[in-house]
Length: 319
Image (cartoon, rainbow, N blue to C red):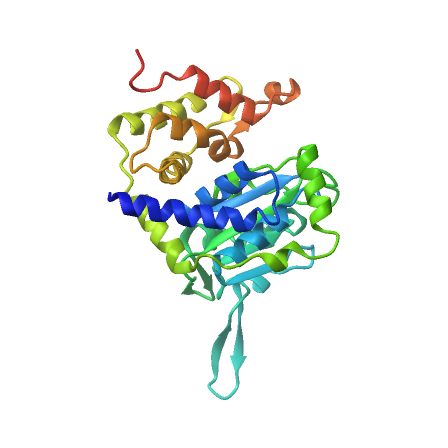
């Protein structure tokens, strides 16, 4: 891969990060992981307490990238047809006419508080997230390219919410938490919202063509057999861990490889290292496993188990 290509990607991601920092202060690591997901052409689940900037990240990203952006606020009365569309009978033509849903003309979809809608409505996104298409009355409709879902859900105030099924959790490339800002960042956030809306200062610095280009470049990042074997070892370790009831799926293993390539690209390299794999492994895999009842009772988190797996699995090239 040419040096100028790597520099172009670096310049693009730095420009995007700079714009998002106008709204999201002190969370460069989260922005970095979000951009990795975009470059890897994967969906993102922002899972955290209310008020820490989950929705702000999605809105800022949409404005910065200049992609077609739509938002749907999930509530119990949202129907699958609101998302994927529906067919209506046309008297003149005596045929069913397809009426598109909210995702049909969307590159970046914010599914806000996705766990506040019914399981039936949640499942309407399954085909769209996996196959980038929707099927209504036996006919399939391709979604725009790229198509990325950024979903949010809160960890508190869960009365009346529907837990995302494991099959849908497995379709998110990464689950990210934001956390509270440090004191200096908190002051900057308060000061920055006294006289103006920081979103008004965000400029578009990329486009969907730039995003597609970065996604294509990421696919060309080299991954040696030793790194592939390392990912396979980590996945196998999750399936044999006595704290895990259901280990990482093959889809999860592929997700690690794609995210690691995006990580390598953002690190200015055209090849994946074991450090890239370790950097993304927890975010890509913690939401894909089911812990045993014993582990949950002991207060062990999936993230803790993922860190344990990476620390105990022998990396390639080690002595």
